[in-house]
Amino acid sequence: MLLAMTGVMFAQIIWRYLLQSPLVWSEELALLLMVWMTFLGSALMLERKEHVAIDLLVEWLPPALNRATQIVGALVVLAFNLALTYGALLIVETAKESIMPGLKISSAWQYMGVLIGGGLLVLVSIEALLRALRGAAATQEKRS
Image 1 (cartoon, rainbow, N blue to C red):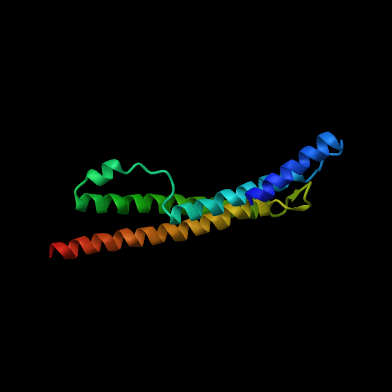
Image 2: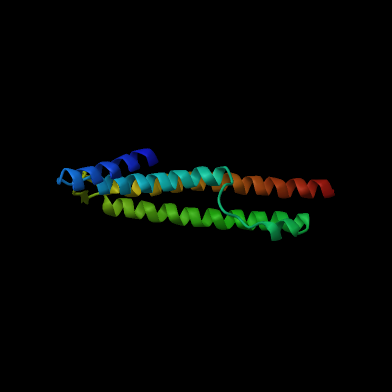
C-alpha cells in the first residue's frame, strides 16, 4: 500500500507540474490507501507487540501485581478498540451515501479501513486479554 501510495503521489506531481493536467483522483486514493495501511498495520503491530510501550515499571513489580497490571492494560486496550470499531461502524453507515468526487466511489470505503482494522484490533486485544488471564491463572496455580 505504501508503494502504491508513493506511486500515486509521484504520478500526481508529474501530471500536475510537467504535463499541466492534474489528476483529480490521486489525492483521494492516496488518503484511502493511507487510512487502510494505518489501521491494518496497527492491528499487525499490536499482534506482534511492536507498539510503543514503556514497561520498565511493570517489570519491577512483584509477579502478582505484574499480572494484574497486564490484565488491566489488556482491558483498557480492548475497551478503546471496541469504542474505535463502534465509532467506525457509525461513520461507515453515515458516509455510505456520500460519493468521493475524484474516485466516484462511496466515501464509506475510506472508513471501512478503520472498521476492518478496528475489528482486527479487537480480536488481537481479546487474544492478549486471554493470554494475560491465563498467565494470572498459571501464577495462582504455582502458588497452590
